[in-house]
Image (tube, rainbow, N blue to C red; front, side, top):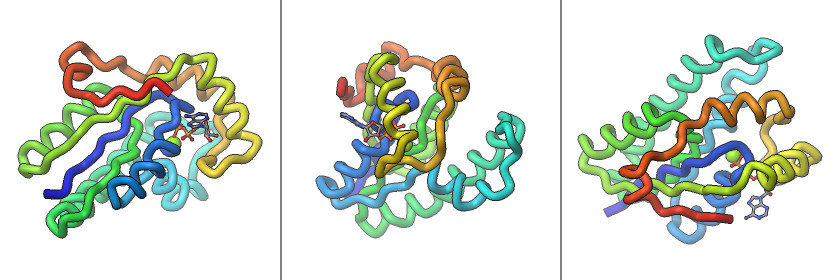
Length: 163
Ligand SMILES: Nc1ncnc2c1ncn2[C@@H]1O[C@H](COP(=O)(O)OP(=O)(O)O)[C@@H](O)[C@H]1O
Ligand SMILES: [Mg+2]
């Protein structure tokens, strides 16, 4: 049976790069939340961005992505959800959705030190295959706080990648 891969990690960890590699390995469809947000809402985004604006829109994208994901799995297509999964609540919500739908899933956690991620993001800002939006130092720092570490239970079942 097809399965869903939840790709989790902080800004610049390499989630999208990793997902692109999994696409070929697993013959999977890749949903990248940044692509969805930029394509659907980028033109209407306030400057500076704020959570009150971004969160409900991210949530709507997630709901639509999940609908399509279920359909793909029912057609025996693997699905990669490159949705950040910064908050434990989001990880638990998706875990429950998959469990309730009887869909096999794996959490993959890309765990890279902050200094390396900061450098990667600076390089990506200059132009890279996975660049969707410019990430300022301020956004990077904000996202560092927003991310909730995986707890011991979550880490037990996650596939952890350290590069
Ligand atoms: N394993 C890696 N080694 C070196 N550079 C990487 C690696 N993974 C990703 N990168 C680079 O780091 C930057 C951030 O990667 P990206 O996949 O966009 O991260 P994320 O989706 O987690 O924010 C990109 O420019 C990418 O090319
Ligand atoms: Mg990404």
